[in-house]
Image 1: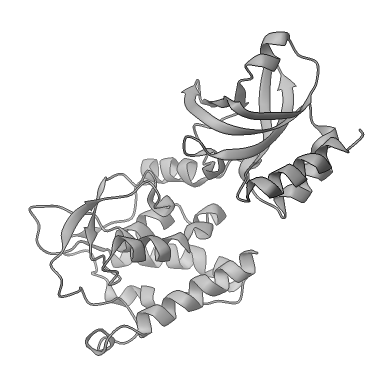
Image 2 (image 1 turned 90 degrees about the horizontal axis):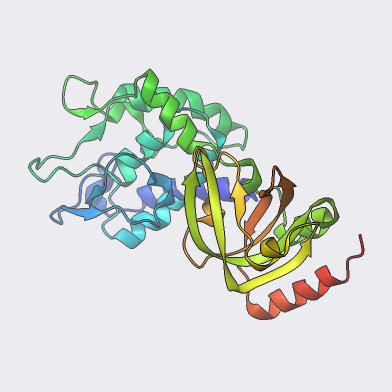
Length: 295
């Protein structure tokens, strides 16, 4: 899965850069020249996962890679999300978002590029990770094209910033996919205290943990260990340390997920959660398979 994703990520984006119109190819296959279209400030959409929590709310469009529409920027940025989960450098998000969703300052006409030192630090940290999948650092991110720092540019983060970025980029253990979600669910079902399908009604942070409240009408309880009648009627789930790690599987009200976990200290603690991305017919078939399991 990841190998296919990286192939599309590295080759697809480089090809995209090279295939831009002739006026942009004059620079070679690297940072695209800004579009002749007048740039404007746009809110960073919540669906741009790559730049969640980047530290600013508005981006310049067209961006610094020549993407002229928000749809185009979203599609290309999504391909780089796996690099964040590898945590190859604390500034990875900062560097990528400075290009895909560059900070937009209304009083500043010229774009703000990443500093060369920022690019070089991320390149040196992430090149070995990309090389493990057989792909080099793409020419479209050639660090020699960025300013040295004697002009306005996005600098590397300081020590305190790096610590915060590392926390934001870490993926919660319960949310890391290791293969086929339905197969994982069925294989681990008997080892869990509870298992269910639900729609997410609300999320809230409590002392560093993430409190997950299901929508009762769309909840299907597959397994429930010893618990009170109140727990059965109105289950509340918890993702330990969910405030300091990322779990895109749970983001968005109404998101349908499969979840499993254990009861600990009076709480139903999630140990595994995946988003359900198939149709209702497949869900009914899956439910029948779960009901047949005898632990």
